[in-house]
Image (tube, rainbow over all chains, first blue to last red):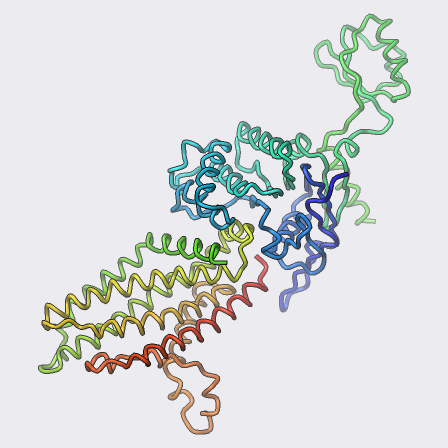
Length: 311
Length: 245
């Protein structure tokens, strides 16, 4: 197991304004992100994701908890010097060109002028803005601003990158590009903390996820462990008009697409099912552990949380 | 530290120079300077004194409008638009952000007041045939006072919107120039040390009447400037530091 790049322990945030009742945005959140991994932070609106990130970045004063990035207290400016951050729907001074904005943020990140020029060119190309580097940001589309936000987060070659809804405002090609960038960053050893509503994005790139609900951690773990359904195996077969009786009796979640049969069976029955399909003249296309979609897992988790609260 | 303060100050200056309000106010004030000789009080024998007095008043008003238009909205706008997130997440301290913003405004003020003073000198030369170097003493005093006012405005703007900032700044100017009038009788004079005065920056009389102020007075003005700005920015840093963004 590698060292933790991000460690949030016992985070709590209670907003109290004079004359108004106290509001707890985050009750108790602890997150550990291992170095060199992509960690997803999920949750419905109001779950406390953004507040947790803001506490980690020193933008919101925590009521309690400790926040570390690479072993340093990230609520202090010195603890954020090796960190890149993409805010949700980033805004920039619109009178600047993309290149000027990058140079400005590079200066703030302590990048020297020569390196800043080099990184500006390469990062703008990496996010697909090479042709727009001299365009004023007031002329940028929502998606272009999002790409610029990602580029500025990578200035100074940070060891940890926090991305809040990076695919927001991007078209499908842009979303694919962002996924590739995250995977490239992981390959380079960079730690990525990804907060996203796009479950497919999280499922595609994250090694581990933390799911927040009502200001607490509802689930945390390896994404495969969370989504694999214990004791069930998914089977995909073709070349049959009907399922053999021995298969039909144990199969579940049956879907027929053209000549392909997709269903799940108890794992201990897999050998029997394969033999039955062979004898019926069918062909096995794939056998994999049955995996729930993140959407289904997420919905079930939130539903069970609601029931617990209701009861 | 300066590595992070300076880019913020430069960004504020660059952004401010793109705002039309700075140029509109300057041009309007310059036109008024040209019109000074047609004032009804422009009596024989005191023309140049009246010119300098009115020119200093115009410089003050111009500086005040520019200072408040830049300082009142800068931080509230950045907090509202969340452009500040990109800045602070780079390891920039809140105090560096606040001081950088103020320095940027101070830089714009320096340029604007210098430009305006040059216009005053040119107009003064052609209407009175004299080079009015003393106007630079007035310009320095105006710039220093606007530096204090913009520091106050920046401090208030870290927790309040533009309307409150402008109202609070105008109130501070009124109080700062009315200490003796406000405190009045001897009993209230005990409060004097608690009421900061901006009167140190009032050099209208010596400049208008041609005597000027001694060099040591100019130095003392700078000392007062540093003290008041230090207090204002310290309060601003404290307020911004406690704020959830």
